Length: 147
Image (cartoon, rainbow, N blue to C red; front, side):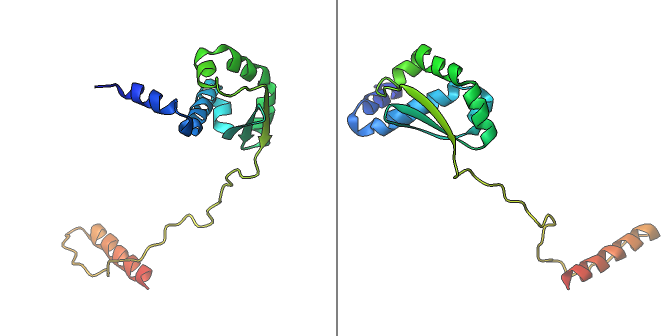
């Protein structure tokens, strides 16, 4: 019985799965980066021997440009990256802020709205007057929210 890793590596070596090899390379590159940069990357692609990083925010781009030499050094020195990305001859590394970055949507209504299923009709079997008064307030509140 063959191991799963052996079967997967055999499948990935075929030309029809070149896209998967490329994605594996991109995942390894992303994992090798510092945590702050990993959070800021939307997607990665290669075009004309240039590795492009699409970033979420201009602040990530500034951080990326500041650490560009580190990123180039990672690509040339780490053996797993060299092995996984051997099919791509990467000569340049560039970054840009994507216009497709997900926008945060502010929720205007924070109070949960739901249909009241209770009708507020229940018997109170308590001897304590304070508890009776509280239950009556609860009944009234249910009746008001029902309408």
